Length: 440
Image (spheres, rainbow, N blue to C red):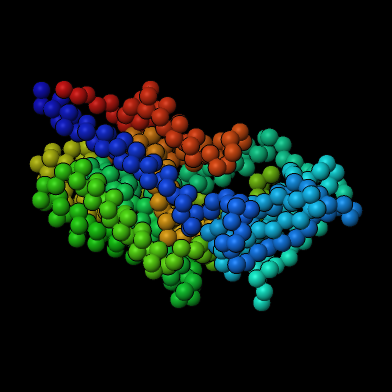
């Protein structure tokens, strides 16, 4: 009867995580109101709210083109408008910065195309608050990418996203497996890595490779500090898992807004984030940063797998995750293992944040929170508390998010990933690689 009782005691963990995901979903729904997120805004509603404006005319053979969509994006802001009957358009922006203006070629009449390389124009304001931007049009045939090439392109993008998501998900999964804590502050550990690279690589002008190393080391130090100062004392006091989860939510909110206070609400770029896509593999084009990101993720994930399967500390980590009381009875220092897991999980989260900053691209104060729900989805989908399950779940989530844009609007691609999560849990509640639990 004892094994049954042990399993019964551990079963509430799943409900805690599902409760955590629900809370995160409710909180995430408020992101759209944040100025740091790139929301679509109609400038026709309140143009007087802006001081700076882009303007222009879209004509072809001296004839105005109506209904052509123009999008502006930059500095954490995004908006769009359409040309009027006279071919004129006007877009307001909240502050003076560099922006990308894009003309949607799909809204042009048949037989009219944008000159090569002119569909997207980078522009910034001079001495005035009004900037005119012109798109050069001509006759031609618009080239489209066939469905096979689109599938391959999105598959590569999804694999890249899934790999960087796995780095954060494995750290969260290991922490949950060894402590039972659903750590919502894990999002801020992801953001921390990117902010440290921004600080040392941009503000202090260190070489980018050195800034990345420093950021990962400081991320590991952050994990050690959080466990030593907050989580270990709370564990010794016997604080329950629900209370610990609430503490992590409060810590997440506090740290996130400290980031906003220190770094501001704008989005900033890391060196090399906007490199041209010089590598061509058939229809797939990627930059050297994209290739380096994928290689780095694979190498690090392989190192984590070797650590868990081949080293004594790794085997001890899996033992504590499986049954902490039994591991302690067999002579394993549980507190030491948990401390190592926190250090490793924070370092992986920091690295994930750096790669996420290049994938987006851009660094912002809430960038980790933007993917927190996806991290929880990957962990739950793969199997609670299992590092390899988190890897599998992350790859599935990453691939589905990118592939779903073939038939879903890009704004709804994250919703599709959560639908997959729900369907898998309906038919396999323990997750893909999780073990079936018995209650009673």
